[in-house]
Length: 426
Image 1 (tube, one colour):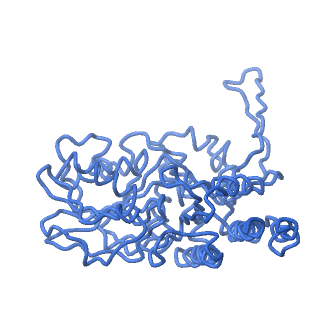
Image 2 (cartoon, helix red, strand yellow):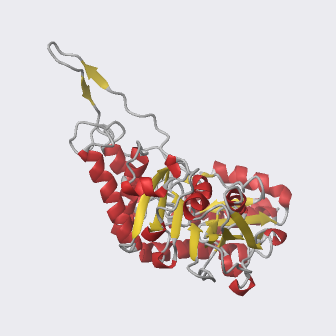
């Protein structure tokens, strides 16, 4: 009887009639994947021509409906950013070359990477005494690069572990220096962050490391601890909340972030480091991880991930056009607020395990009271065009990652589905 009655509920009607209106969220971006096959090329060889003439068709937004992608990463990009990159696919700004084939030593790419850095500095108000570096690989590469560059083998460093990624960073640092665990949330299944007074810091430690937002467990620092000790500084992994809100860069010695959550495709990691911390790498530090080498060469020591950096630059430009990170934070707060309110208002049908004061604006994990319904929930949501809602394999449940490019319409559709699903299975 409950299933029959629910088909006429307001939420069922909203879910059934939900439509995507990209134009209403154009500046904020839509998070979806293009599924339409790419255009074909027309290649013509003419007599006396040194090379074939390639004619590229005009590119436009596919008419096929796309999904709302709630994946934790790699994340899809704003629609207008994708369309802009698509329009420059065959020739970047009349250069006659795709961004993917031009030399990283050429003036064309030099303008791309310089503009990307300039816009990021403007977004985050990065002080002049900080370097902005673009590295290959993911943020996990920096788990080793940080201790190798910032301390000697006999030096002590402090780590706060509020989730899986902080734990991995802590264990990697143990290979290169004396890594101290000042606090761990493992016993509470990484669902809270205590008062900073509970952190048993070593005053002689070189730095204090935190993960600003734990993607798997949905725990986020709302403010940041102050390192205790002489010349001690704060290091933060901001991979999953980078550029989602304003940050006072001057409070950190180093910030690093994999791009594949909020600012670009996978393959590039951004490091923002205070200049006086550069140049102290251990002798065993590989060239590819040495901050001084990359700073001296403006991130162009070797062939960088050119296309990924180009896409990051387009996103930085888009975020500035939205009004900067203050405006972006307001949108993110609204999305997270209505989703958490739905969970709290479900009477226990949905449950978020994370303490309210540290719930992430980016990653919302939750479980169903009847755990045997979780697989059906994820399957049925997929049929409605909402994908990648399965929680991380280490914790299970459901997880909705609602990064910058997830429009409010996507969260509203998920909420309508959640209420309709509850009505059917109450």
